[in-house]
Image (tube, rainbow, N blue to C red):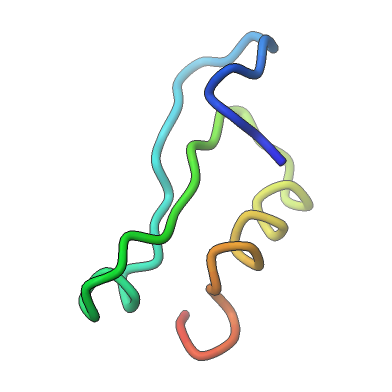
Length: 55
């Protein structure tokens, strides 16, 4: 799990959110430091609910 306190060097950070949940009134998301691997990004998507009901 990635956190803002992660100490690795990064070019930038972004808060990735589930827009479908946001439109329903829930802020579900995570801070992600870039660069990020495809596997790390897929894990973030899974944790915030993207790929099931929401895309």
